[in-house]
Length: 333
Image (cartoon, rainbow, N blue to C red; front, side, top):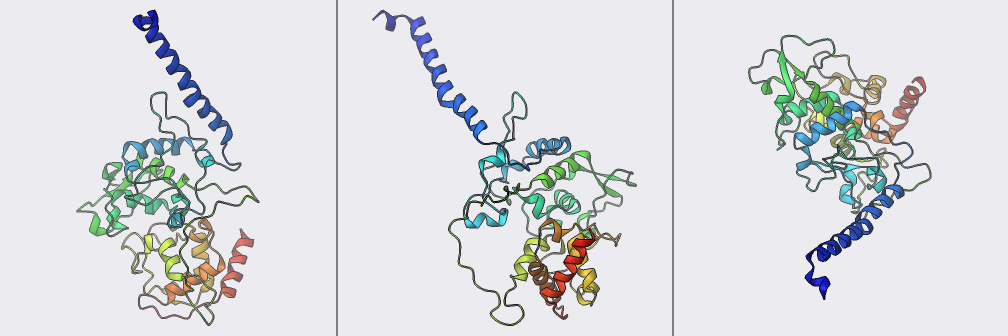
């Protein structure tokens, strides 16, 4: 019974048990987990600029409202093309010796999931405006504004990026609103958040608890087309707004647009697939169709939705017309 009366032996035994349990229950399984879950073959590591943006993402509290995990339930399908897997997080290491911020999966979706935001919303102009004043692009957004990431200048420098802000959100500011380095880094990090495609031949996990889908058209030329309104909401409404009126001084309106109502389908498809930077009054549009891998059927559905919504009354187009132009654009790249 001398063992139980000797505090040194008791302490040493408890410490030894703790060390052994920690080794076999925590450390060895963690090492094996790292070895078993390697990154996907075409994974692209964060650049130094994106890494600094990740640190800004953490310091500005973005982790409190945004998740980065696509669960395998059908309601999460809007956030990514497939459910998340362990390999998606395998390359994420500690920020430094003291801080373990390897993954930013989050626990609450006060705001949308950002796992694939780099593909869903790759526009630098949109992201910067959204950071400066979220209500400028999402009318009822509850996200706080981050004006300290920007500064007002008399003129924009050579390598600086001006943020095109609608007049109603400038609050008397007469100079140029310019993004600071931290804002650019943060947006670079957001643009890097894209789901890595699985290797060829590897089938993704299926989404569970799927809802029954009802056809959007039962007859006529649009019988096999997807829902153009839904596609517009997913790919276009963030900039051009749900009412098609855009944002004055930032994003052009589609309601009454000469391009939407006109007959130059080649220009229309070219803008969707390659982006647009011909009007200095508005921010540069990214290549939505190419970035989001839109099919001819999806592009056709979006065009027809825009041609017949918000009072627009233009002639609809066919999949064959759009596909021919998309093939031409692809071949000329």
